Image (cartoon, rainbow, N blue to C red; front, top):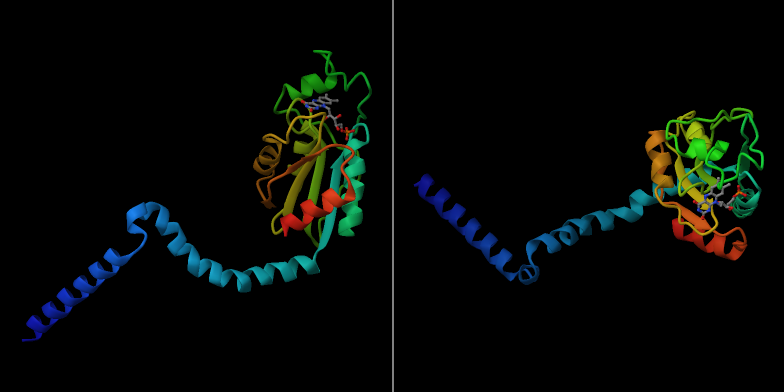
Amino acid sequence: MKQVLSLLLAALLVASLAACAGSSPADPTGNTTADPFVSAEPESTAAPESAAAPDTTAAAGKTLVVVFSATGTTKGVAEKIAAIENADLYEIKAAQEYTAADLDWNDQSSRTTKEQNDKTARPAIGSEPLSLDGYTKIYIGYPIWWGEEPRIMDTFVESYDFTGITLIPFCTSGGSGIGRSGQNLADNAGSGNWLNGQRFGGGVSETELQTWIDGLN
Ligand SMILES: Cc1cc2nc3c(=O)[nH]c(=O)nc-3n(C[C@H](O)[C@H](O)[C@H](O)COP(=O)(O)O)c2cc1C
């Protein structure tokens, strides 16, 4: 008798599940597109609470703007970001400063051409080492050289542990986009929470930077 009842209950359960699935509006468009929305709902309901906690932590932490700038353009943008964010500024200086001849992109044998052609090049940093204690957010800026980050940026990111820190790449260029440079830095760093980067022209205004920063939060 018990077995019969169990079988009946199981049959009822299967029937009701089938009825639910059949009435789903997701069916006509296919389950694959509908499923992420279905599973996203509980996450988004939970998001305000869980998102509030890291925000509070980030507010408690300090913000740093790190910049490498060979001719001053990216440094100008970095200073504006630091002013908006009330952040500290750290400048990466090459141990051996880049001369005008070093920066000559028309010269196949110039220092920068050779460095950019060698993904393993790691020019030494001359600035005092940095303590990342207390920082939870770092903007990291550089000029685009041959479509990528200057190799000294790889020296920098490989020198620190960014665990628990959000990193936001930004760059200036003559017109090229940020390309893969932000991803290269994230890959080489191997730690930290890296956001998508942004390219700016040297004349970017405080208002434009503020809008960008607001969009990150
Ligand atoms: C060696 C070298 C390579 C460059 N390669 C590019 C490039 O591929 N695309 C681009 O748009 N600009 C390129 N530029 C221009 C710089 O990205 C641009 O002038 C930048 O704003 C300079 O920033 P800085 O003054 O902070 O060094 C290059 C400049 C140099 C010196």
